[in-house]
Image (cartoon, rainbow, N blue to C red):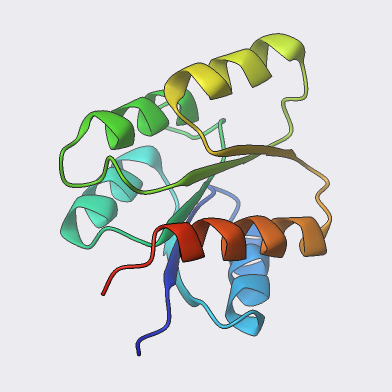
Length: 127
């Protein structure tokens, strides 16, 4: 059985790799994307089991990426875990409205992130 894959969408390369390293340690295949456009193209090319998505990206807002993922027939089932420095009530509300499965804030607890990935990958398991 193939490992579930996680698409990490974070423009800070080091943080992207760190999240990917945690995901790999937990048994996921890690796929990086450094921009919203790259994330959408990659998700359409091969929908991931879970997407970890930053909200502040250089090209497209993470809220818009999330909305597009949820609108697209090919990717609408992909659980989106937002991982962001934005911790306000308005941002959390916008996260719910765009269809995110979870809203985690930076700095993050690796155990909480891995629990979210595992929970959502299991719910989204593909044969």
